[in-house]
Image (cartoon, rainbow, N blue to C red; front, side):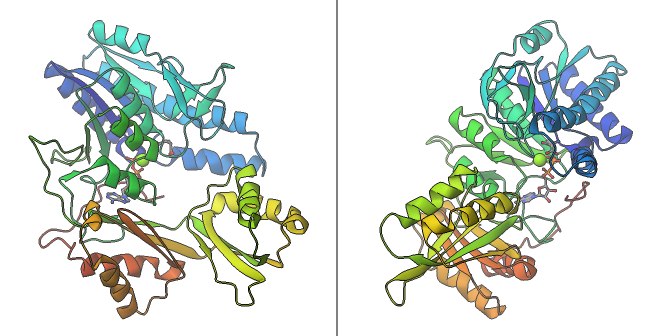
Length: 420
Ligand code: ADP
Ligand code: ASP
Ligand code: MG
């Protein structure tokens, strides 16, 4: 008997038919003699719809109320799913994040799990029931509900799998696994059979929303094997796991390409070129919680002043621009420019450590497409380039072909979802 945590994303439970299909799958896993914990997301685009609704009520909804609102989405799907499983004669109970013992810090909208106390889930399993858990939510020490950030149901699932010492955590979604690029952008993208957690982390943190970043971090830290697969097919998906000596993985040079259209760029012009100014500048960004990514500092021509550009989430741009404007006298810069129309392409592969010529192939492919690069940043296993937003998808397709990642036979299938 295995203990299996299964997570079903919003597109898998978008309507009653989807709920029935998922219920059937969970029931079959249970009937096969396994213990099952199923983590479920809100139906379809419910979370986006709730966000839109709140925006119509007020431009600045209080964060606490926002989290109470958003957690309602997963409560709807968890209870309906439990009803659908019950109707199939399988004993089942659904639990909110709070009931499942998901304890978080107090950062509404982006809470981190600090502890898991899943006694009720363990009890359910001991009683022979399937346990359904609402994803994406927890409770803080003040007993208020919190959410884990967009896409956070993955993290609920992996954290529970780690705490319950599950044999596997299956992430069911609307594509057949992790592909060499987003199948919505590159129809010739290839499914990756096995990928390391570190490569998956780089993809997830650079825009590939197939897995929530913190879910991958949990999986790596607690060695939880992840199987990312479609809830619409029975095909084998992608295994995210650490290779072992006995069972090494065949590692390609390039694992895949991520793209991110949700970042903007701030350029601070005419910054005094002296020690300590960059530190102060980024302190200002940090003070409003901005997560700064790629940073480029120009060589100062007159050696008195320089320009500093950096990327950050468009959602953090307004507050950051505001804080930087307030600090103009202190920082002594001349001008501040914000550009929203940028996109970031990231090429990821552990083989970059040992292979040469990767950057020349990347830059060559973009040059041949006539695509201009605004900024470049690298890690040991990643190269990212900032391009114009209008050229991002074309850039992804060109680089995908340049590295021979295109699948030879079938097109990647997108079974559902709106890509929103
Ligand atoms: P769910 O609702 O199941 O959580 P998401 O929409 O969060 O699903 O994630 C699945 C989507 O991730 C896919 O439909 C696909 O468009 C997108 N995606 C982005 N990059 C990749 C990739 N490299 N491989 C597979 N899917 C990707
Ligand atoms: N429903 C939440 C969202 O749309 C959480 C999730 O789907 O993982 O972001
Ligand atoms: Mg998701």
